[in-house]
Amino acid sequence: MKTEVVIGKLKIKNPVLVASGTFGYGDELLGTVDINKLGGIVTKSLTLKPKIGNPPPRIAETPCGMLNSIGLENIGVDKFITEKLPILRNYDTAIIVNIAAKRVEDYCEIINRLEDAEGVSAYEINISCPNVKEGGLEFGTNLSMTAKIVKETRKLTDKTLIIKLTPNVTRISDFAKVCKEEGADAVSLINTVVGMAIDIKTRKPKIASITGGLSGPAIKPIAIAKVFEVFRNVDIPIIGIGGITTWEDAVEFMIAGAKAVQVGTANFIDPTASLQIISGIIRYCEENKIYDVNEIVGSIVIDSPKVEK
Figure 1 (cartoon, one colour):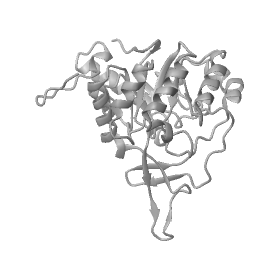
Figure 2: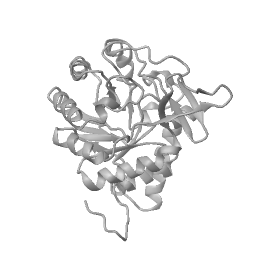
Figure 3: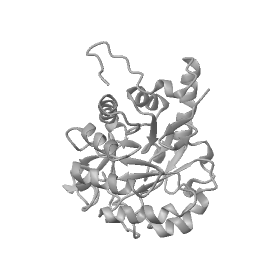
């Protein structure tokens, strides 16, 4: 059975990736997860300089998902290249580096530094983090700024360029269209949804930044709707993200139009969740006599109204 998926120039052995910020840099889970079986790792977001992130508390569990405001804490691109990349490139899996920045120039500088480093398979440009004051949603909800970031970063690399979009806009397909027009190879969607939780005893917000990004099963229906919207309006590969905890969730995303998926919050519950999802997708294909996993993509059946592509 064929499980390989192609996104731009990137070939991944199966359609299951681990989402940025939920799997560290990969080396933290060495010995716990057989990383070689993953389609790929999307690294924790990298900024040009190291970042300490937001003050604690930064995570709160809610009855329907996880609220976080990490604030892009990371070791910076230079330390990633010298300390993490030599370990990561020993794995037989794709290494997709997630990049965040406050300025377009910083996105470009990070790519420039990574281009000379061995082991990077592709880039995921994060223009949609809800937990930073500058950049983040400020970029991801602005069509002209989105276009500029894609245009400028596209000039710097032939590697697969993926743009991570926010659901916190009126029409996400408008942003996917701009990404395609400016040369992006794919879009990943969705990033977290802005949310808030309050401790009723203290009457204080449960996280220090007051609002944060909601992830987990609560956002899955939102994410699938966004994937479907982009699938039927823009001809660009989609990587689906949002509340995927089982193989059934992953298949649902693929039927809606996602060519690959990223597993996020589920990694905090069970670091091996992605491996179980891969096995489940393969079983689903075998039981349904599907010989190429790509046959699932966009196979949604709607009697009325007719889907227009």
